[in-house]
Image: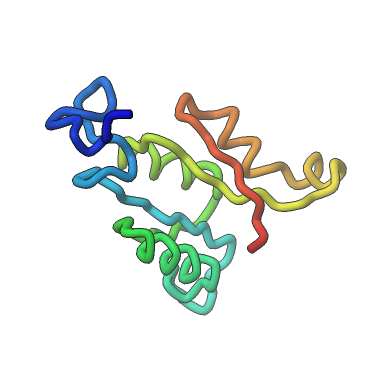
Length: 126
């Protein structure tokens, strides 16, 4: 079987970009946290889930930029995806009852329905 590392320049996606995970691939992530209330003036770097995600991504060699926003979380995610021309949106879903989703909405559902970009939904747990 041929060695993929022998594929030479231009190997990867049909548009000429290196395949994800290959040497030279542009691997960046923007971590978005939307504050519903931020009376204490906290920063996105103070949010534990952002710190954990950042650490795991950086350990995997991915450049990370955290961004914090106020207001509607789904709109914040979609705006950031548009600003950065994201290849994909990844969200961690929460466990909610069907009634809770109806009453409070679902950020994940809004993101999925309001974008043309691929969306990967992951478990919110470790």
